[in-house]
Length: 288
Ligand SMILES: [Zn+2]
Image (tube, rainbow, N blue to C red; front, side):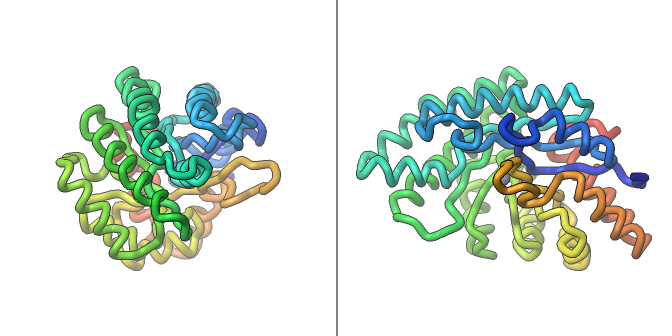
């Protein structure tokens, strides 16, 4: 496929039980892909036990997936963490011992993640944040505590933070802004609101944060209409053989770009910003 703009996927997953990072990256590259932010999955997606130890093993396995993607010839930001839904799962199973879970993650996982950033093995951490569905209040308390720690990690060690949050519009964006400000995170654009609505993305941009929106043509067109200039496009591909193509294949972003450029040449500038400039800005990677 011929494409006028190099294509970036700012949030995707890969698992050896699915297509795997190597095949995904090769196919993405064939479609004009140059950059991918690859985010670790909860342990069960890799066939690992649903325990804290499993979650740490999942991050280690993910580092290898990132290496595979790099070998396939694309630039990769490797992002590792413990998903808020997995924290929710641990809290519900722990029946009241949630404090142990938070401090265990802070002492074992967050320190490990910080070390991986220092060693250049991770370029960021995530997903952290809050479940997007209703659950027990203890789960929100634990996840918010971890979200604060995650912000401290990127403040002190660098790298980006991918946030998985409720789609609560202004409340969601402002809650992040307050945390970022009160912790003194200076590089605010390294805080990425993943899976944002275009409206939330616009608010995030206005506050100096970053946001990813689904890489579908209608969503990108809407982001342009709103002038949400800080956005990046994501496939949020989960690479689960039981749910093929969910949320979308990374190479479908290339199709969206072509579709928009075909209908209106005015999209060029906006899409170049989304696919190249914003990625360079947030991840410090050189464009192709
Ligand atoms: Zn994701």
